[in-house]
Length: 279
Image (cartoon, rainbow, N blue to C red; front, side, top):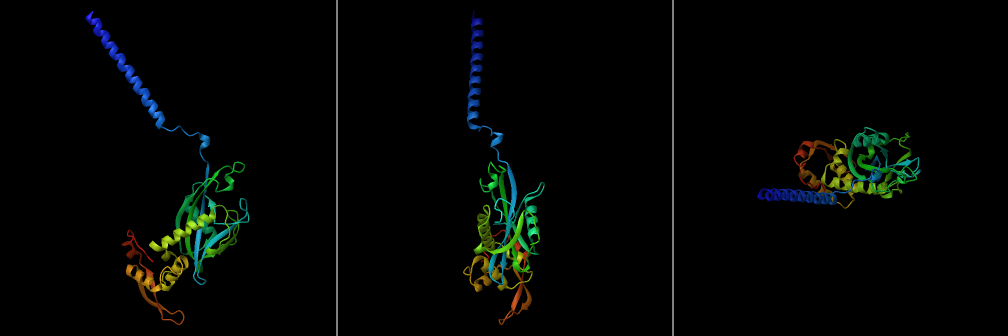
């Protein structure tokens, strides 16, 4: 009898342990189900086309103005409206390669600065996203470029990417632009201002040899006349030790001959990872 009772106790203990383990497993499964989000339905995933739009800024030193390159669209949406030069990215093409392709199709220039700006992809930014149109989301990866107006040539004999015209517009007198390109231009302008204040991008678009007056004029055109007086600007840049005096002087007008300088990229490497203020 004692052996039967002992066997019964062992059986009951095993059953209790098994039931407890099953309850624990069920509770864990319930908690896991609460914590894990339900899988997305395939039809809720967005289908994207990726484009590249370039904000190309140019400094016209002769007329002291900042310019933006625009193209006129031939096809809908926004047919006959001005927009930024852009393109859809081709199969197997890198984003930066697409940006340079747009530049090569629209301008000829020797010196330029190019940088990725921002990605614009809010719903409804392109009319072609409508269900009665293509029903596809359009993502714009924007870039901004800086070039010298004196050496850049706009290519007018082209018909690429549905454009029928090309023109430089003063930044402060831009027409209404297609899509959300007004926003992209403003975003690009703020980036340009910031880059001029803490990085040497101005030297990417100046001639190899330049006067401090040339450099100062570029800054005033972009940042405004009141950003700094010339003497403080000159003193601050020379103290940084990133300019080489070529020993050559040039005469412009009735004033004293001005020294020609060159950007010292090697000297700048010593400062590259330090906070700098150029103006």
